[in-house]
Structures are given as C-alpha cells and as structure tokens.
Image 1: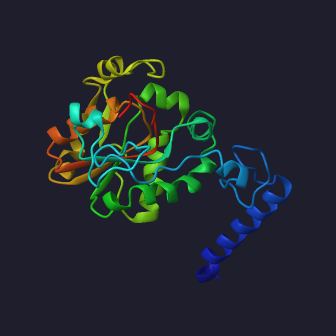
Image 2: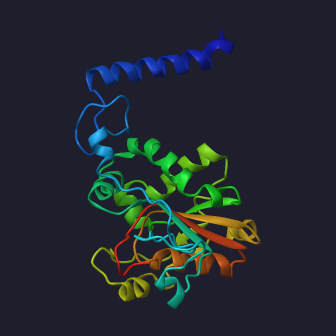
Length: 254
C-alpha cells in the first residue's frame, strides 16, 4: 500500500478539487463568468488584456506603437541607460491587467498564479535560457507581515517550477521600509528606494559571476529594479535581467 500512497493522495486531491469546483465553480477574475479551471479567464476577460509583442525596445522592453529596426532602443534608454542588461514584461499595464495584479497582490487571489506563469515564461524565454538564478524583489518585513506573502516571490517560485531555474528567495533584502510609490513621479521613486536594498551575506558567494533574473509584478519607472540591479552587480553578478508580469507602457515611461 505504501507504494500506492502518493498516487492515491494525488487522486484524492483531484477528487476534492472537482468537488469544490462543483460547489463553487471557478470564475474569471475579470468578468466573474464561470470558467473551466481556477486562474483561467473567459473570452471576454482575455479581450481586456494587452500582451506585449514586438516591436519593443531591445533594452527595456518598452513596446513601440510603430515599426522599428531590430535592436532599436527607446529614447529613455538612450538618454538614461539602465543598470540592468535587459527587461521584459508579459502585459501592458492597463485596466484589465491592473485588476488582475491588484487582486493577486492585495486581494489574496494567489490562485491566479498558474495563469501568469506561461505568460512570463514566454515573455522571458530568451533570458531564462541564460539564467543561473531567479531573485524576487523583496518586501520589507513589516509589509510582508501585513500582506502575508510577497507576490514577486510567488511569481519567481512559479517560474522556477516551470523552467527548473533555481530561485533565491532571500538573496536580496530590503533594509528599510519605504513609502508606497503609487503617486510618486520618477524622480521621487528613485530617491525613495535609494540604498533600500542589500545582499544577504549567506548568498553573496552564490551571486558572484552569475546571470540573474530579477522578478517583480509591475515595471513602472524602473526605479526599484535599477536600484536592486546596482546592488546585485556590486556584489559581483555577471548580468542582471528584469522580468515582470506587466509594465507601464504609455509615453514618459521607460
């Protein structure tokens, strides 16, 4: 019987999920319509999302609204080259993606994660083949206690499970609690996160000479990921790439 216990356990879990779905049918997070499985979207829900596809900035992944030559950089990257080596995102940050991300980030809708992972793996396919480790952008412990989970860490673990790239959850840590940045401009955001991160000493040797992917939920101005990148490269990282679920994609951001 011991040899069959893992199979029986999995079958019991599947039966329980089917029973739960019968009592509480899974619903689309954007429209409320009944869908086949938890975390999936209805056809109307899909229409609310804008996926980022070429053409986009070779460096930061900013989506262009017109055709450009291969390897073109956006104006922001030309004027202010970022610290990281490249950045990619699955979605444009808009009404639909905002509702998904805020629900996942603040509304305990962690069941949405399985739907996010394939989008992220597709957006970051090239960098994932080169990566040694995934590192989530950390929360300060006070905010982590209030929220109970770090959404970037959950995303990193989901990608790691799908791709096999190891994740270092605690390699990067936030040294001070910074105010929320939702209503800050780019300059204030950069000041807000300056010297707010450090490498955990136990992971310093693992990071040296490695190619890393920094994981976060949304890329807005790049202030947070640039500051994290500086810390990682100062610790000896060979390259740092950025992978986020969504990014702000209107003029003025890059």
